[in-house]
Length: 424
Image 1 (spheres, one colour):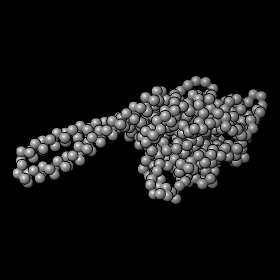
Image 2: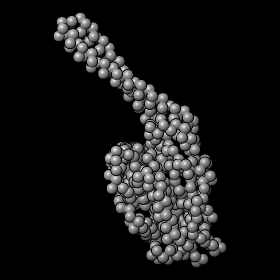
Image 3: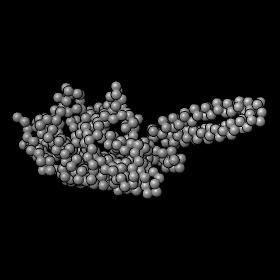
Image 4: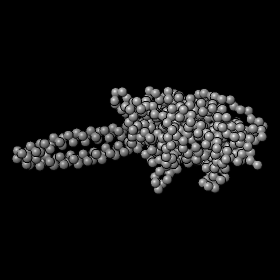
Protein backbone atom coordinates (compact mmCIF):
# COMPACT_ATOMS: atom_id res chain seq x y z
CA UNK A 1 0.00 0.00 0.00
CA UNK A 2 1.28 3.46 -0.86
CA UNK A 3 1.98 5.63 2.15
CA UNK A 4 0.34 8.99 2.83
CA UNK A 5 3.69 10.79 3.24
CA UNK A 6 4.70 9.54 -0.21
CA UNK A 7 1.48 10.85 -1.78
CA UNK A 8 1.76 14.19 0.04
CA UNK A 9 5.39 14.75 -0.90
CA UNK A 10 5.42 13.15 -4.35
CA UNK A 11 2.01 13.82 -5.89
CA UNK A 12 3.36 14.26 -9.43
CA UNK A 13 5.46 11.08 -9.24
CA UNK A 14 2.53 9.13 -7.82
CA UNK A 15 0.21 10.29 -10.60
CA UNK A 16 2.82 9.49 -13.26
CA UNK A 17 3.38 6.02 -11.80
CA UNK A 18 -0.32 5.26 -11.62
CA UNK A 19 -0.71 6.46 -15.19
CA UNK A 20 2.08 4.06 -16.25
CA UNK A 21 0.01 1.27 -14.68
CA UNK A 22 -3.01 2.57 -16.59
CA UNK A 23 -5.07 3.43 -13.55
CA UNK A 24 -8.08 5.44 -14.76
CA UNK A 25 -8.09 9.12 -13.72
CA UNK A 26 -5.00 8.91 -11.49
CA UNK A 27 -5.03 12.63 -10.64
CA UNK A 28 -8.55 12.40 -9.23
CA UNK A 29 -7.68 9.22 -7.31
CA UNK A 30 -4.65 10.80 -5.62
CA UNK A 31 -6.34 14.16 -5.00
CA UNK A 32 -9.35 12.46 -3.42
CA UNK A 33 -7.06 10.75 -0.88
CA UNK A 34 -5.15 13.97 -0.19
CA UNK A 35 -8.43 15.86 0.27
CA UNK A 36 -9.68 13.29 2.78
CA UNK A 37 -6.33 13.41 4.57
CA UNK A 38 -6.52 17.21 4.80
CA UNK A 39 -10.11 17.01 6.06
CA UNK A 40 -9.10 14.46 8.69
CA UNK A 41 -6.12 16.50 9.89
CA UNK A 42 -8.13 19.74 10.02
CA UNK A 43 -10.87 18.12 12.10
CA UNK A 44 -8.29 16.51 14.38
CA UNK A 45 -6.47 19.82 14.91
CA UNK A 46 -9.74 21.57 15.80
CA UNK A 47 -10.65 18.75 18.18
CA UNK A 48 -7.23 18.90 19.84
CA UNK A 49 -7.53 22.67 20.27
CA UNK A 50 -10.97 22.32 21.83
CA UNK A 51 -9.69 19.59 24.17
CA UNK A 52 -6.85 21.84 25.34
CA UNK A 53 -9.28 24.70 25.83
CA UNK A 54 -11.70 22.46 27.76
CA UNK A 55 -8.89 21.48 30.15
CA UNK A 56 -8.11 25.12 30.84
CA UNK A 57 -11.80 25.91 31.32
CA UNK A 58 -12.19 23.02 33.79
CA UNK A 59 -9.49 24.58 35.94
CA UNK A 60 -11.18 27.99 35.65
CA UNK A 61 -14.52 26.49 36.72
CA UNK A 62 -12.89 25.14 39.86
CA UNK A 63 -11.35 28.54 40.62
CA UNK A 64 -14.68 30.31 40.11
CA UNK A 65 -16.47 27.88 42.44
CA UNK A 66 -13.82 28.47 45.11
CA UNK A 67 -14.35 32.21 44.73
CA UNK A 68 -18.10 31.81 45.10
CA UNK A 69 -18.84 32.91 41.57
CA UNK A 70 -21.33 30.12 40.95
CA UNK A 71 -23.23 31.80 38.11
CA UNK A 72 -20.06 32.44 36.14
CA UNK A 73 -18.94 28.85 36.78
CA UNK A 74 -22.28 27.44 35.56
CA UNK A 75 -22.13 29.57 32.41
CA UNK A 76 -18.63 28.35 31.69
CA UNK A 77 -19.70 24.76 32.38
CA UNK A 78 -22.50 25.11 29.80
CA UNK A 79 -19.95 26.43 27.28
CA UNK A 80 -17.70 23.43 27.96
CA UNK A 81 -20.64 21.08 27.39
CA UNK A 82 -21.22 22.67 23.96
CA UNK A 83 -17.54 22.31 23.12
CA UNK A 84 -17.57 18.63 24.13
CA UNK A 85 -20.55 18.04 21.86
CA UNK A 86 -18.57 19.70 19.07
CA UNK A 87 -15.60 17.48 19.90
CA UNK A 88 -17.84 14.43 19.53
CA UNK A 89 -18.91 15.62 16.07
CA UNK A 90 -15.29 16.24 15.15
CA UNK A 91 -14.28 12.76 16.34
CA UNK A 92 -16.98 11.27 14.10
CA UNK A 93 -15.72 13.41 11.20
CA UNK A 94 -12.13 12.25 11.80
CA UNK A 95 -13.21 8.60 11.90
CA UNK A 96 -15.28 8.91 8.72
CA UNK A 97 -12.53 10.72 6.81
CA UNK A 98 -10.00 8.11 7.98
CA UNK A 99 -12.24 5.22 6.87
CA UNK A 100 -12.95 6.82 3.48
CA UNK A 101 -9.27 7.61 2.99
CA UNK A 102 -8.13 4.07 3.82
CA UNK A 103 -10.82 2.59 1.56
CA UNK A 104 -9.52 4.68 -1.33
CA UNK A 105 -5.85 4.15 -0.49
CA UNK A 106 -6.00 0.34 -0.56
CA UNK A 107 -7.36 0.44 -4.12
CA UNK A 108 -4.25 2.21 -5.47
CA UNK A 109 -1.68 -0.16 -6.99
CA UNK A 110 2.03 0.12 -6.40
CA UNK A 111 4.09 2.67 -8.33
CA UNK A 112 6.36 1.10 -10.99
CA UNK A 113 10.10 1.63 -10.69
CA UNK A 114 11.82 3.97 -13.13
CA UNK A 115 13.18 0.96 -15.07
CA UNK A 116 9.67 -0.27 -15.97
CA UNK A 117 8.84 0.47 -19.63
CA UNK A 118 5.68 2.10 -20.85
CA UNK A 119 3.08 -0.24 -22.28
CA UNK A 120 -0.40 -1.61 -21.80
CA UNK A 121 -0.35 -5.31 -22.79
CA UNK A 122 1.98 -8.32 -22.85
CA UNK A 123 3.14 -7.49 -26.37
CA UNK A 124 4.71 -4.30 -24.94
CA UNK A 125 7.02 -6.23 -22.58
CA UNK A 126 10.75 -6.05 -23.27
CA UNK A 127 12.92 -9.12 -23.86
CA UNK A 128 15.85 -8.59 -21.49
CA UNK A 129 17.75 -11.86 -21.91
CA UNK A 130 17.60 -15.29 -23.56
CA UNK A 131 19.19 -18.63 -22.80
CA UNK A 132 19.26 -22.22 -24.01
CA UNK A 133 18.73 -23.64 -27.48
CA UNK A 134 15.42 -24.36 -29.16
CA UNK A 135 15.14 -28.03 -30.13
CA UNK A 136 14.23 -29.19 -33.61
CA UNK A 137 11.53 -31.81 -33.35
CA UNK A 138 10.89 -34.69 -35.71
CA UNK A 139 7.95 -34.57 -38.14
CA UNK A 140 4.69 -35.45 -36.44
CA UNK A 141 5.80 -34.26 -32.99
CA UNK A 142 2.80 -33.78 -30.71
CA UNK A 143 1.74 -31.10 -28.22
CA UNK A 144 1.76 -32.23 -24.63
CA UNK A 145 -2.01 -32.73 -24.37
CA UNK A 146 -1.71 -35.46 -27.00
CA UNK A 147 1.51 -36.89 -25.57
CA UNK A 148 0.03 -37.39 -22.10
CA UNK A 149 -2.75 -39.51 -23.58
CA UNK A 150 -0.31 -41.90 -25.25
CA UNK A 151 1.95 -41.92 -22.19
CA UNK A 152 -0.93 -42.35 -19.73
CA UNK A 153 0.65 -39.98 -17.18
CA UNK A 154 -2.03 -37.27 -16.68
CA UNK A 155 -5.79 -37.84 -16.73
CA UNK A 156 -7.87 -34.71 -17.32
CA UNK A 157 -11.16 -36.56 -17.74
CA UNK A 158 -10.76 -38.25 -14.36
CA UNK A 159 -10.04 -34.84 -12.82
CA UNK A 160 -13.28 -33.51 -14.32
CA UNK A 161 -15.21 -36.40 -12.78
CA UNK A 162 -13.65 -35.91 -9.36
CA UNK A 163 -13.67 -32.11 -9.25
CA UNK A 164 -14.08 -30.26 -12.54
CA UNK A 165 -12.11 -28.82 -15.44
CA UNK A 166 -8.62 -27.61 -14.57
CA UNK A 167 -7.95 -30.21 -11.85
CA UNK A 168 -5.88 -32.99 -13.49
CA UNK A 169 -4.94 -36.32 -11.93
CA UNK A 170 -1.24 -37.21 -12.27
CA UNK A 171 -0.56 -40.94 -12.53
CA UNK A 172 2.51 -43.13 -12.67
CA UNK A 173 5.30 -41.28 -14.47
CA UNK A 174 3.34 -38.03 -14.29
CA UNK A 175 3.14 -38.16 -10.50
CA UNK A 176 6.82 -39.14 -10.31
CA UNK A 177 7.80 -36.24 -12.56
CA UNK A 178 5.90 -33.80 -10.34
CA UNK A 179 7.65 -35.16 -7.26
CA UNK A 180 11.11 -35.04 -8.85
CA UNK A 181 10.63 -31.45 -10.01
CA UNK A 182 9.40 -30.30 -6.59
CA UNK A 183 12.35 -32.01 -4.92
CA UNK A 184 14.82 -30.46 -7.39
CA UNK A 185 13.42 -26.96 -6.92
CA UNK A 186 13.38 -27.21 -3.13
CA UNK A 187 16.87 -28.68 -2.96
CA UNK A 188 18.28 -25.93 -5.18
CA UNK A 189 16.54 -23.26 -3.09
CA UNK A 190 18.03 -24.64 0.12
CA UNK A 191 21.47 -24.77 -1.55
CA UNK A 192 21.00 -21.09 -2.43
CA UNK A 193 20.48 -20.17 1.23
CA UNK A 194 16.69 -20.27 1.51
CA UNK A 195 15.05 -21.76 4.59
CA UNK A 196 12.44 -24.33 3.60
CA UNK A 197 8.98 -23.81 5.12
CA UNK A 198 5.71 -25.68 4.69
CA UNK A 199 2.92 -23.10 5.12
CA UNK A 200 -0.86 -23.55 5.29
CA UNK A 201 -2.72 -23.47 1.97
CA UNK A 202 -5.73 -21.72 3.51
CA UNK A 203 -5.29 -18.12 4.67
CA UNK A 204 -7.46 -15.53 6.38
CA UNK A 205 -8.49 -12.21 4.86
CA UNK A 206 -5.75 -10.31 6.71
CA UNK A 207 -3.13 -12.44 4.95
CA UNK A 208 -4.75 -11.84 1.56
CA UNK A 209 -4.78 -8.11 2.27
CA UNK A 210 -1.17 -8.11 3.44
CA UNK A 211 0.26 -9.26 0.11
CA UNK A 212 -2.23 -7.37 -2.06
CA UNK A 213 -4.52 -10.19 -3.25
CA UNK A 214 -7.41 -8.61 -1.34
CA UNK A 215 -9.37 -6.64 -2.23
CA UNK A 216 -7.79 -6.54 -5.72
CA UNK A 217 -8.18 -10.22 -6.73
CA UNK A 218 -11.00 -11.41 -4.50
CA UNK A 219 -12.93 -12.91 -7.43
CA UNK A 220 -9.92 -14.98 -8.52
CA UNK A 221 -9.52 -16.77 -5.18
CA UNK A 222 -11.48 -19.78 -3.94
CA UNK A 223 -13.32 -18.71 -0.80
CA UNK A 224 -14.39 -21.09 1.98
CA UNK A 225 -17.32 -18.89 3.02
CA UNK A 226 -18.32 -20.71 6.22
CA UNK A 227 -14.85 -20.15 7.72
CA UNK A 228 -14.00 -16.97 5.79
CA UNK A 229 -10.74 -18.52 4.57
CA UNK A 230 -9.17 -18.43 1.12
CA UNK A 231 -7.32 -21.12 -0.81
CA UNK A 232 -3.95 -19.62 -1.70
CA UNK A 233 -3.24 -18.54 -5.30
CA UNK A 234 0.49 -18.80 -4.53
CA UNK A 235 2.75 -19.63 -1.59
CA UNK A 236 3.78 -15.97 -1.65
CA UNK A 237 0.70 -15.22 0.47
CA UNK A 238 1.29 -17.45 3.53
CA UNK A 239 5.10 -17.28 3.37
CA UNK A 240 5.26 -13.47 3.20
CA UNK A 241 2.66 -13.20 5.97
CA UNK A 242 5.06 -14.96 8.31
CA UNK A 243 6.44 -11.43 8.71
CA UNK A 244 3.13 -9.63 9.28
CA UNK A 245 3.27 -7.32 12.32
CA UNK A 246 6.98 -8.05 12.77
CA UNK A 247 9.92 -5.73 13.47
CA UNK A 248 13.21 -7.28 12.33
CA UNK A 249 16.55 -6.23 13.71
CA UNK A 250 19.12 -5.26 11.09
CA UNK A 251 21.21 -8.36 11.77
CA UNK A 252 18.17 -10.55 10.99
CA UNK A 253 18.19 -9.45 7.35
CA UNK A 254 18.11 -10.78 4.74
CA UNK A 255 15.28 -13.22 5.31
CA UNK A 256 15.12 -15.91 2.60
CA UNK A 257 12.32 -18.51 2.65
CA UNK A 258 11.21 -21.14 0.15
CA UNK A 259 8.06 -23.22 0.22
CA UNK A 260 6.23 -25.76 -1.90
CA UNK A 261 2.42 -25.64 -2.05
CA UNK A 262 -0.42 -26.47 -4.36
CA UNK A 263 -1.95 -23.26 -5.72
CA UNK A 264 -5.57 -22.50 -6.61
CA UNK A 265 -6.88 -19.88 -9.04
CA UNK A 266 -10.43 -19.25 -10.22
CA UNK A 267 -9.29 -17.87 -13.57
CA UNK A 268 -11.98 -17.18 -16.13
CA UNK A 269 -12.26 -19.97 -18.68
CA UNK A 270 -11.45 -19.46 -22.35
CA UNK A 271 -10.96 -21.56 -25.44
CA UNK A 272 -8.04 -22.31 -27.73
CA UNK A 273 -4.67 -24.03 -27.77
CA UNK A 274 -3.17 -21.42 -25.43
CA UNK A 275 -5.23 -22.83 -22.53
CA UNK A 276 -5.29 -26.51 -23.50
CA UNK A 277 -3.82 -29.24 -21.34
CA UNK A 278 -1.41 -27.92 -18.74
CA UNK A 279 -1.32 -24.41 -20.15
CA UNK A 280 -3.90 -23.14 -17.66
CA UNK A 281 -5.15 -24.93 -14.57
CA UNK A 282 -7.22 -24.15 -11.50
CA UNK A 283 -4.93 -26.24 -9.28
CA UNK A 284 -1.19 -26.59 -9.80
CA UNK A 285 2.03 -27.08 -7.85
CA UNK A 286 4.72 -24.46 -7.33
CA UNK A 287 7.85 -23.76 -5.32
CA UNK A 288 8.04 -20.12 -4.27
CA UNK A 289 11.02 -18.12 -3.02
CA UNK A 290 10.50 -15.04 -0.82
CA UNK A 291 12.98 -12.48 0.46
CA UNK A 292 12.81 -9.57 2.92
CA UNK A 293 15.58 -7.03 2.35
CA UNK A 294 16.61 -3.48 3.13
CA UNK A 295 15.72 -0.89 0.46
CA UNK A 296 19.40 -0.54 -0.45
CA UNK A 297 19.74 -4.25 -1.20
CA UNK A 298 16.42 -5.19 -2.75
CA UNK A 299 17.24 -4.67 -6.42
CA UNK A 300 20.45 -6.63 -6.08
CA UNK A 301 18.32 -9.35 -4.47
CA UNK A 302 15.94 -9.18 -7.44
CA UNK A 303 18.84 -9.93 -9.80
CA UNK A 304 19.99 -12.78 -7.54
CA UNK A 305 16.52 -14.31 -7.62
CA UNK A 306 16.42 -13.98 -11.42
CA UNK A 307 19.80 -15.73 -11.66
CA UNK A 308 18.42 -18.54 -9.48
CA UNK A 309 15.45 -19.05 -11.83
CA UNK A 310 17.77 -19.01 -14.85
CA UNK A 311 19.97 -21.68 -13.27
CA UNK A 312 16.94 -23.95 -12.83
CA UNK A 313 15.91 -23.53 -16.46
CA UNK A 314 19.45 -24.22 -17.61
CA UNK A 315 19.57 -27.33 -15.40
CA UNK A 316 16.39 -28.58 -17.09
CA UNK A 317 17.92 -27.79 -20.52
CA UNK A 318 14.97 -25.62 -21.48
CA UNK A 319 15.28 -22.66 -23.85
CA UNK A 320 14.09 -19.54 -22.04
CA UNK A 321 13.71 -15.80 -22.22
CA UNK A 322 13.49 -13.11 -19.57
CA UNK A 323 10.89 -10.34 -19.99
CA UNK A 324 10.83 -6.98 -18.24
CA UNK A 325 7.13 -6.32 -17.82
CA UNK A 326 5.63 -3.02 -18.94
CA UNK A 327 3.50 -0.93 -16.60
CA UNK A 328 0.18 -2.18 -17.91
CA UNK A 329 1.09 -5.88 -17.60
CA UNK A 330 2.37 -5.78 -14.02
CA UNK A 331 0.58 -7.05 -10.94
CA UNK A 332 -1.24 -4.76 -8.51
CA UNK A 333 1.51 -4.91 -5.87
CA UNK A 334 4.67 -5.02 -7.96
CA UNK A 335 7.20 -2.22 -8.47
CA UNK A 336 9.20 -4.24 -11.00
CA UNK A 337 8.65 -7.71 -12.44
CA UNK A 338 10.59 -10.08 -14.67
CA UNK A 339 8.68 -12.97 -16.24
CA UNK A 340 10.40 -16.10 -17.51
CA UNK A 341 9.06 -18.05 -20.45
CA UNK A 342 10.18 -21.39 -21.89
CA UNK A 343 9.95 -22.39 -25.52
CA UNK A 344 7.32 -25.01 -26.25
CA UNK A 345 8.63 -26.65 -29.42
CA UNK A 346 5.48 -28.59 -30.32
CA UNK A 347 3.20 -25.59 -29.76
CA UNK A 348 5.69 -23.21 -31.34
CA UNK A 349 5.28 -20.54 -28.69
CA UNK A 350 6.58 -19.23 -25.38
CA UNK A 351 4.99 -20.36 -22.10
CA UNK A 352 5.26 -18.32 -18.89
CA UNK A 353 6.73 -20.41 -16.04
CA UNK A 354 7.98 -17.86 -13.50
CA UNK A 355 7.45 -14.34 -12.28
CA UNK A 356 10.03 -12.58 -10.07
CA UNK A 357 9.02 -9.30 -8.45
CA UNK A 358 10.21 -6.55 -6.14
CA UNK A 359 7.33 -4.97 -4.23
CA UNK A 360 9.55 -2.41 -2.49
CA UNK A 361 7.60 -1.16 0.58
CA UNK A 362 4.11 -1.78 -0.85
CA UNK A 363 3.46 -5.14 0.84
CA UNK A 364 5.48 -4.20 3.93
CA UNK A 365 3.21 -1.23 4.57
CA UNK A 366 0.12 -3.44 4.41
CA UNK A 367 1.83 -6.12 6.51
CA UNK A 368 3.25 -3.61 9.02
CA UNK A 369 6.62 -5.24 8.39
CA UNK A 370 9.47 -3.06 9.58
CA UNK A 371 13.16 -3.37 10.36
CA UNK A 372 15.43 -1.42 12.65
CA UNK A 373 18.43 0.18 10.92
CA UNK A 374 21.54 1.22 12.82
CA UNK A 375 20.00 4.48 14.04
CA UNK A 376 17.29 2.46 15.88
CA UNK A 377 14.36 4.18 14.15
CA UNK A 378 12.25 1.56 12.37
CA UNK A 379 11.61 1.69 8.62
CA UNK A 380 9.57 -0.31 6.12
CA UNK A 381 11.41 -3.29 4.64
CA UNK A 382 11.29 -4.38 0.99
CA UNK A 383 9.67 -7.70 0.04
CA UNK A 384 10.37 -9.82 -3.04
CA UNK A 385 9.08 -13.11 -4.36
CA UNK A 386 9.55 -15.41 -7.32
CA UNK A 387 8.27 -18.65 -8.80
CA UNK A 388 11.09 -21.17 -8.64
CA UNK A 389 9.27 -22.84 -10.28
CA UNK A 390 5.62 -23.34 -11.30
CA UNK A 391 5.26 -26.90 -12.57
CA UNK A 392 2.50 -27.20 -15.22
CA UNK A 393 4.10 -25.40 -18.16
CA UNK A 394 7.55 -26.68 -17.17
CA UNK A 395 6.12 -30.19 -17.50
CA UNK A 396 4.47 -29.27 -20.80
CA UNK A 397 7.73 -27.96 -22.27
CA UNK A 398 9.77 -30.90 -20.92
CA UNK A 399 7.42 -33.41 -22.51
CA UNK A 400 7.19 -31.63 -25.84
CA UNK A 401 10.86 -30.71 -26.22
CA UNK A 402 12.15 -34.16 -25.22
CA UNK A 403 9.81 -36.40 -27.21
CA UNK A 404 11.37 -39.03 -29.46
CA UNK A 405 10.24 -40.34 -32.87
CA UNK A 406 8.96 -43.57 -31.26
CA UNK A 407 6.62 -41.58 -28.98
CA UNK A 408 8.73 -41.92 -25.84
CA UNK A 409 10.05 -39.00 -23.76
CA UNK A 410 13.64 -38.93 -22.48
CA UNK A 411 13.85 -36.31 -19.71
CA UNK A 412 17.01 -34.51 -18.54
CA UNK A 413 19.35 -36.67 -16.47
CA UNK A 414 19.12 -34.33 -13.45
CA UNK A 415 15.58 -35.60 -12.84
CA UNK A 416 16.66 -39.25 -12.63
CA UNK A 417 13.47 -40.28 -14.45
CA UNK A 418 12.87 -43.50 -16.35
CA UNK A 419 12.05 -43.13 -20.02
CA UNK A 420 8.35 -42.36 -20.41
CA UNK A 421 6.95 -44.75 -22.99
CA UNK A 422 3.53 -45.00 -24.68
CA UNK A 423 1.13 -47.30 -22.89
CA UNK A 424 -0.08 -50.37 -24.72
